[in-house]
Image 1: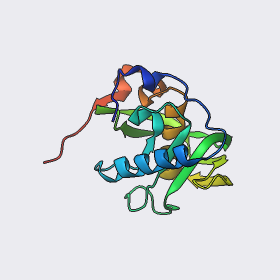
Image 2 (image 1 turned 30 degrees about the vertical axis):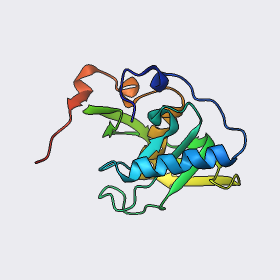
Image 3 (image 1 turned 135 degrees about the vertical axis):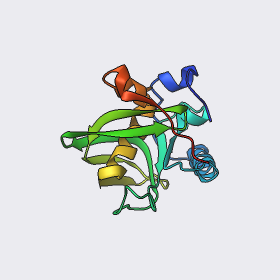
Length: 161
């Protein structure tokens, strides 16, 4: 897992164009990494050092996501619709010591390719929408810290014992 300030995290990722065996292997790597990363609800290819426009997300079971859709895999995702932003706290595996208050749309529609290369449209709301937008930002070379309005909206991550 790459961490700030690795330069891969601040570059726009390359489009995949089509889903082939290499992209499917990348999706498997993302899923395997997410599975062994405690509290991880999403992961983008740049976070594991691959500058490709692919992310995975699954907020199932998260207390802030009562209506999760399960596993979402999107390649070359595009944001096609977003509602008014809501300010809420979020963190990131690539910025493990901090969280921040970030304004993100409460409802989104994204389009892209699924793991089989078929077109997919995803409509999400609440925490799930936030997670998808967070991962989409990674593909554009942005971290949640880039979306924080002021330093007073950045917080030390709580540690739980």
